[in-house]
Figure (spheres, rainbow, N blue to C red):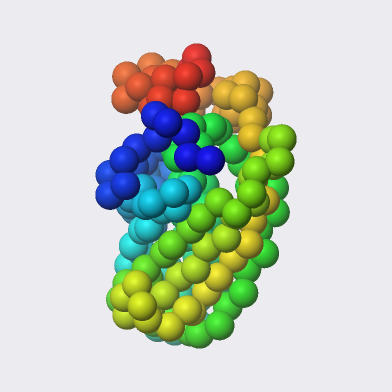
Length: 177
């Protein structure tokens, strides 16, 4: 179920961390993925494949496409108002994705059982109704903020804890940074 305090449908979710490769705006070669809340427990997002994201000449690297799906799936936590990490990500690559392509992403939560969040996502070429190029099914595991404090690098943890915007994001999930 969508949390009653979740962002409204159409609302831009924003980056969860400025240095995040998936959504952070401070990452020069990152994906800069911007997700929007959808209806129910869904999000939509767009990602433009840049030259820095290629594997084979002129085509997106499969790992980058998997990262885009992982980021979209991870954004669903905003709608549940929970912090979760990827436990499993199964990705199917159906079509090549050329550089300069805009990939339209949709993700949704399928089920929640205890700390487990089951979700699915698709990436389409040419618009929300275009052909599916990549899809993923995922299992996310709910964690507390201590997970990041215990396992992250000290300098990044301290920088995040001194960033008022990062503290605001943590409060959105009703946790102490």
